[in-house]
Image (cartoon, rainbow over all chains, first blue to last red; front, side, top):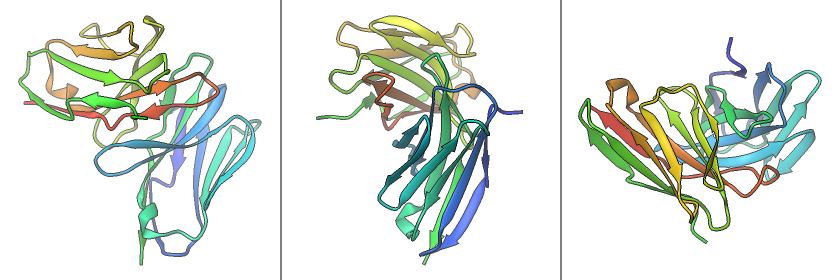
Length: 108
Length: 112
């Protein structure tokens, strides 16, 4: 079993839909990161969380430390949101353990 | 301010050859980490360096080595290349643990 599990693996949505991507982890962490990867490979950091909830524009990230679970929400989705969204956890050593990603396709 | 820069962007090597990948962190960032991302998978941790010292190493063979220079730039070396080393190699720099990571665009290595 992977230390970081994401669901769904693939997601197709229509423009304007509310999207939720889930991440569960099995190890103790100091922080959880949500990252966005576009075709070509570049990774952009969206959020770093250690508790509670963060919001940036149409993106919201939440974490429940007790349940070892985090969610990334996208409100009013747009085709430019199409990308791979990756959850990564950071332990006491400063290394990231990544999930396999959720491939999101938003259509018109 | 420039982001994390990696060079080269693409590289094709033959099995058995050696390769050196380079990373320049954001100015002021003293920590550099290297990750390998095989097609269709999430990145895997290879190394972390802080202040020129190795602070962490992932589950990779001794063919993989790295170093960090006084200006905090870093090199990743891979010897005796195998087909399975074909991947996107990502570098990330960090100011400190409270500020998260900034990733470079990666070097895509193809071993033929």
